[in-house]
Image (cartoon, rainbow, N blue to C red; front, side, top):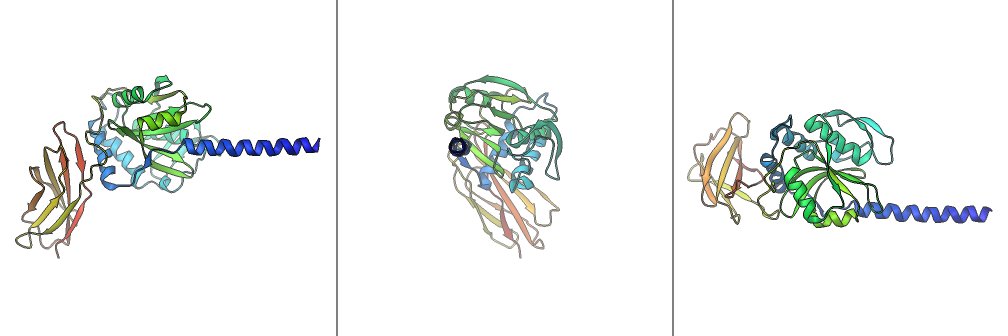
Length: 308
């Protein structure tokens, strides 16, 4: 009898180890996102989502999502793990919400829905998706803060917070032990990870979008450099050309924060000289936006120029 118990225990241990490994592999996204220019781009895409009648605005959604990408303590540790108890209250010390009792990835996504919209979403398009049907669902109904859910099955049970999408895939915030990651999934990779499981969108904002939120390929990066112009008050900016860009815009900000705004809302080339800057300022920062014919933008990281 003891030998049977020992044998059963060993078999169970092996089974649990294999299951755990499968689950962890299944949660792996196409890639983890860290680039500042790509983060700016996926945040800018929220402005092209439709928030009509949702009770919130694109600005509010961006504020919440930016916090959880850049500042939240959950970037280092999410203290409501899958292995823990069900919780009905979640806080990172800045945003606090009462949620439907849950834990781990699902608790995080309920929490994010409440942060953006103040309520939970209803199931939309629940089925075994293909890459094409998932793409259509997210491009039409996906707005920042919505909750993507994969049902329990043979391969994976998971929840993700949708941010924005393009023609190839979509961006999410998701819990993977022990913290929250900013991730990018291609539609085909996500369907492969689903392993034939049913998935759906908890659609909190039922307004419809006109299509992909991001109008540029994700691998385009806008890099800016700054140098002194003809005199100490001038700053000459240069950047790389972005394929498909119709024009560029330049935004400035004083180092002391007392003044900021558009230096130019239309630059046809890849350089611009900022004139009449206050030489008593310690520094200025400049940001360049590439804009295409349908309003899609790529945003550079801010470049700092020291005035003295």
